[in-house]
Amino acid sequence: MMKLTDEQQAILDGAQGEVLAKVMKTLVMYGETFGAEKMVPVTSKYNHLVTSFGLKMLGPVYELMDKLIEAGAVSQQKFSVDPRPVDKNVPANFLQNLIFNKIMYSKQDFYEEQLNKLGLMEKDAFTCACYLDEVGNVPKKGEVLSWAESSAVVYANSVLGARCNRNSGIMDIMGSVVGYVPYFGLLTDEGRKATWVIRIETEKKPEAQLLGSAIGMKVMEDVPYVFGLDKWLGTELDEAACSYLKDFGAATASNGAVGLYHIDNLTPEAKELGEELIAQDANVYVIDDAELERVKNNYPIMWKDKDAKPKLCFMGCPHMSLEQLKTWTDRVEAGLKEAGNNKVVIPTVFTASKPVLREFEKTEYAERLKKTGVITSYICPLMYMNNPLCGKMPVITSSNKLRTYTTSRYYTDDEILVQITKGGK
Ligand code: F3S
Image 1 (tube, protein in one colour):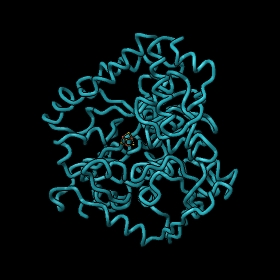
Image 2 (cartoon, rainbow, N blue to C red):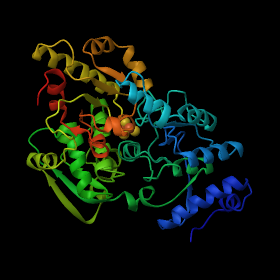
Image 3 (tube, protein in one colour):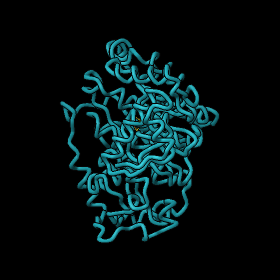
Image 4 (tube, rainbow, N blue to C red):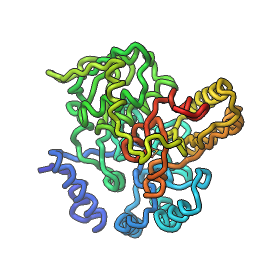
């Protein structure tokens, strides 16, 4: 049984109203399921919510939101939220637009209104990469969070050293509204120990999304401690390393269920505690180039016609960083020049948060990227593809999360570059 403080018990007993009592009860039951013995305060400045889309069938969510708003049970924390599901910049035909706006996401405006009342950070705080400086929801080391978006949770835990479990949607709002979360798993020192040792022995820098996928599929929900990646990323969390870890982590979290990883000599806890973080009798997984090739070759191809010409390319799942937008502008330009083309030969969408896109627009890169024909958007590609019409389209991506949850086909960054600038395989 969980031991509550007087204040927590009072909330549970209804001192702050019936709605908060129910929320507290749900959190207590959630914690007890995982053996938590206490609740601890949520200490981050902001929260992040995973449910960003006004899907018609989410009636119960809107009802709950209404109840919270009516009862004045709004969080003390402002929050960011996952990306919006539609953007008119992204190519879609008449039927697709009809399905998006009138059928699937017809409650979008209504839901966004609710989010505003509950405490959205700013009107453009719709992104899964909320932890980037431009967005500003950057938790500090040791802070306790009530987040659910898996790619954001793994980044916050691993790269920022914050503490958060892989909560489910709605549970994220509840923890924030009450201000407490159950203490178990990745909130505890013990739960942050690595039960897997990963040794990177590749001859070239491993592709972030492929490496993350290999590790995720091997360790599932366990914590890996990775040796040998500092050789490729360096020992400082600079912009390039953070972008790499963002994509790597999202792949570990979606191809497995990783919520925290440690990179030797690089991530904050590994730098501080080193091998003390490795549990006794940890398993070992050695990764070389052949292993990554094996993993890649095992991905199923979900296209009806395996030889179809790609109709769309999505990059930026999770949302791209400013550094990635700039690097990719250079790469696309160079690729086009080599191929003798002026514009990309497959409609290509780079997704990033609006705050990052705003900063990007201030640089000379924005105009250059536009000239290549690449479109930028704040959309979530997964939301775009999650309907029967788009699901049938041959879409390519270098996101292993998008590959896992949709019919899109995975290619490495280099392969994507060739496809969008030259065409062909
Ligand atoms: Fe982000 Fe949507 Fe991908 S939330 S991680 S862009 S599936």
